[in-house]
Image 1 (tube, one colour):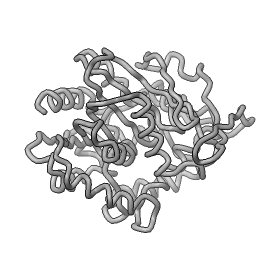
Image 2 (cartoon, one colour; image 1 turned 90 degrees about the horizontal axis):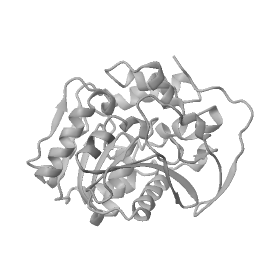
Image 3 (cartoon, helix red, strand yellow; image 1 turned 60 degrees about the vertical axis):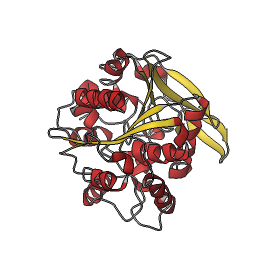
Length: 318
């Protein structure tokens, strides 16, 4: 099983001047992203709060926007099978890498990551890109962040498709997440990226695909994002983000824009969370919700064609 190399010599670092102070960052060398299996998209970059954020931008520039947000420990590579198919159908498909992931800047220190900061950085990305009439697709941490962003910038979002994710308040944590967290903690200080990617899929990932998920991380100086994200999930009401998410839930309880859930039946981590959205979000009423039988947590790997069809139909029917 491929793994990220242990820490060697510390790479060159940069000082990024942000609203949260001066943060020490590193950038993955470009050559790490050459010749990745199934991935040939040109990189695009934008500066958000002093940090360089990478994004994929495919399809016609005047096409209806689909914003794809990834979670932990993935990056835009997760959407490599969906992006061309959606672009071919005339959509403008945008898939950013969260700060700390993919080709975006990496924060050297775990303590520089916070739930609130990532929400702010993604809001600023949406505004800097001048995105409007957005169809949002979110999964895993993409939902924790993306649902907050959509609620805060409601006028920019037309629809939301939620897959294998939720909005944690510390009172609605699935038992499967605790089992996942326990297994990650057993692995040691650093998140076992390749192992979790394979455990979280029904399909067997090729070695080249696993290496592509490791490409952003030449050694453990680069892995603060993946290493800390599972610790930032509010699993109790007193954790950072829990109170704010309760407030955001009130927005979704009055959300009448189209809201669709498409989950993987075999997702043992977050696979039960669709129920509360179907029950509590007005815009979810009457939608063609789906549970895909042979899909696990990383549903983009297991059922990309199903997701493309759901997105296409969701937009056309709403």
